[in-house]
Length: 162
Image (tube, rainbow, N blue to C red):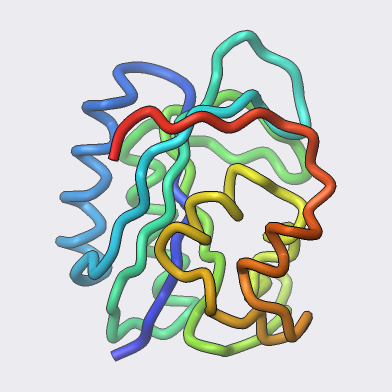
């Protein structure tokens, strides 16, 4: 089994219900959720909107390989009405990012692991630190705790529930 950290977030619709639904779909389609961070609210990152995001990080065990995992994730996102536009951030009901996949590093056209912006985003690092502060970024050779300490993101993050 592979250990995968997923960043889950959205800012449209009934966020509480969307998180309940996505947890169920992840367990059905990807594998069991082993750990779950609290849910945090943050302002949008990389674009402007008045609708704040809810974000959390999940640790999932899966037998899927990275590209198969990505395809299943895209199916789950589409079930929430997600339509991706390359290089463009926008409001969305549900977004799921592969943050880490074991200690694998890969960079192919459709998928980069670890996620290339982990170290720049408080909305990822705060919940990631809650469940895996000692996990080491395989390329930066820093723990999540160290990445959080060095993060320059000025965003405000507040715990919603958990």
